[in-house]
Image (cartoon, protein in one colour):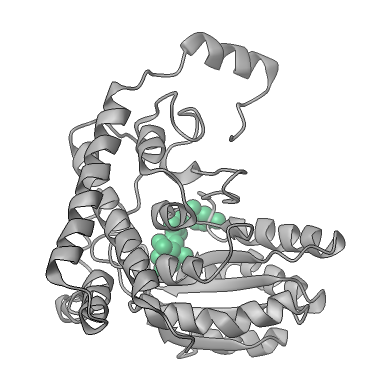
Length: 326
Ligand SMILES: Cc1ncc(C[n+]2csc(CCOP(=O)(O)OP(=O)(O)O)c2C)c(N)n1
Ligand SMILES: [Mg+2]
């Protein structure tokens, strides 16, 4: 694994804590009626977004999923503008038109969360083709989960990316459930990464709860992508800390399995790594305090922001246009 110094570890810890607190505050605000519609928490999976996105450059692209808040924060979205988007406010990333499943920013190179399972993979593959055609050096990191790997779009995207040697890394967050369906009921292979062989690309499975391991596992896929050698599949094992969405109590999750994964909480694993790297308790507490303050500001900002104008909505619908992302 490539070395991770204390400074990068601290950054990774802060991003993980930011995602964790963002999700907890968003759930709280949902319960207060400030957020409507669906909301799919990323709690428990933070190590994957943090480890994989820490390994790429600001110019690289990501394509996210319906469970996308963690990807967006790790890529550099401002939690204040994200919270405003979840609240449906004018100050949000999509001016309140998108909500939780449509956070996106061209400037940040997040090609978008997506309510269509596996839908983002076609966007990722097409974007990687565009990069190749203009001889760019960027890569696309395409996130998906186990359920998506049974969707035709997943297989078509993997195949096209392979035959065209596209600079895309498929990061499969295997949280072992698609809503209430366990992966053992929807796949006959033990590791979904073995499916990569069917498309002629490398595939590996790693511990997704350890951001440092994910960071290390990204290095070879990145080298390949930048060298024009084509795509890779990186399967990261993980587990949700709760139900599929905010209104799902997740009672079908086996208690023992949940306890096993919670004991390997990505935030705790990073904290342990920080301590081993010699970062003191006071420094860690200062990071926690900064994150707390940021999320307090995010909720205040979203609450104080204006709703979008109904007249503008009407005009956009009449014109057949929607406000695009910034
Ligand atoms: C094409 C499509 N089929 C079905 C759905 C309904 N749906 C939303 S999330 C989900 C489960 C997705 O499971 P997985 O890919 O494992 O993602 P996870 O929820 O675990 O992050 C389903 C079936 C959808 N949004 N899009
Ligand atoms: Mg899943």
